[in-house]
Length: 370
Image (cartoon, rainbow, N blue to C red; front, side, top):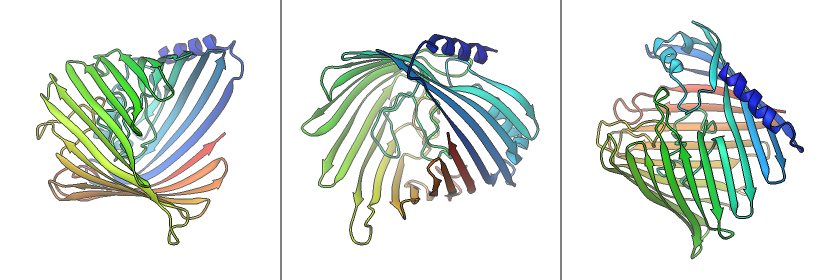
């Protein structure tokens, strides 16, 4: 009921706006993996997303609404069902289950819903939005609002945060951003307040941030620059005062595109190191920070357009403390302008350490845009 009322309210607010754009996306993700009892099971995820965008003078808005239907073997796993019953990690409870049984679950939710006012150097956004901080290609320690694990099956699905975001641009490259997000004890979300300054200095993109995440205080910086045809990236975050105690997280890496007679389309390569200084055995909150059991991780990425319609991407992660690695190739075929097919695999190894809890996975993903 609350979700229907929210959508109706947002649509009512924006009905007078002209230049409205309506889009949609259907995704089917069929995957095979192991359940908590080590049995191989097949599960099918279907998601229909409708998106409305509009603008009028200095005002703009976006509303993205999902219907999601899960069916298959994982739904019969008690541990997986327990995870589904957890409240979404958002302040606003804008999700509801329409139908559920031991083998299926049909739910709907608000994916994005924000209203923005922009005039001159000022921009204000309120609602469910994506706050994307950090420049790392694999890990982003300074992204304290929407952290995404590199092992995620759908890394492009970033639910966002219910917040007020204010930005002041004092130049073409520099600005100050303040984000305030309320907490919700029922969903396990903490109150967050952070300020970030970003600018370009001596051909380097530099950002400095400070904030308060619940009882935890944080400070950090982010820097990106070029060395020849490659780019270097570094993020550092220091935390103190929270339940874990004082700790730091650092990511540093290089990336670039290699083009020669062997790779005329350009081979993208990236390598990145991640240090997690949280005490051994302490799990950071998944909604608040980049998670890692190991203190030292190394990652690599590669991507190449085999043809104008076929692309191969590869992600490799290695635990440098306890032997183990995680390999995730993706092969995408753009069958039509509005239709993509992707074959996905995940191969973790290691009986202990970072990837011990992961299982081998095979998946096929279909995406239709309309």
